[in-house]
Image (cartoon, rainbow, N blue to C red; front, side, top):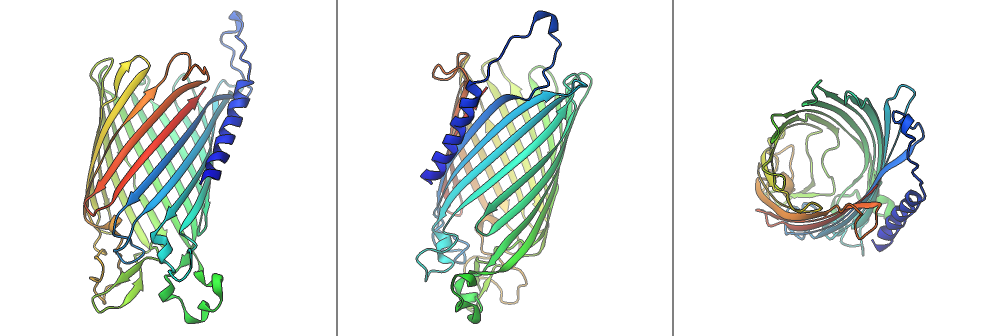
Length: 406
């Protein structure tokens, strides 16, 4: 974990060094309309997050046992831009993410080993987005390509984004399409692996690979109602097909039998959300959010969130927030030892169960005019902390650091 952090940190510092060497020359007064066609760095963002959770409903061991997990995530993105001959702006956003996690429950896939293959893992996920925009109208379109890889999982992604603004720029429509083509290894619990393959040692951990494809769209409409009020409506239908069950998760039945998690190979999702932002004063903003979620597995969920950023000074603000979620679980869920032996689909993953949860915390944001800590290029620092508590007993904490360089 420390090596990953140092690697990302050095990469980030290297970009900052390159940024520091860029000399910006003021444009002559008689060429104020000139648009530079050379690619230039607009900004660099580094986000680091540490997450820790604990509970006693691990899906790996059938809905009982430790859920202890830690994750250290680092993301660095580099935004660059230039203008073409027609005066349209090209924006390139390169993002590199590196996550490293350790999971005590994953060590129970094969308890006979000192450490199973999935007890700890590193995920690397680069992406590149290109967007062409017309700064006069605010309209734009673009494309995204992405990769993601870890021990038992590989994904290739592609996306399209489109933005249209009204003439007065008070109404904005955004449309996105995304596709992720995944392949992940089928790993069974040690008890369910074929006897013949157990003699092959490490190679027996995987029962081959299986595809999983995900397709989603996003439609959003935002409206400036007046100087103090803005509204946003979001519709995000999604479809998944392939191996949607996590096969190394156990399920126990009322007759004492044991099987690997089995779920339908198709899933439809339909989240509908709305945001309402009220600018109460120059110092206070009230941000509200509501989301309804439904799918064909029987899950129904409501999420409500409130965040109130407050400016303490022109350059320092705090943002307390609270989010509440209530969910009706899938029809395929049952706790440890309570599955019907005749069921075709079954899971003891409490993420898919009926539950309520609270998430609350606060953030502090520094954006002084002469740079954070006097470093002019480091123009923003934000630190956020959140505490999560679920009715199933899961508890987690997350702390996030965001640095922006321009």
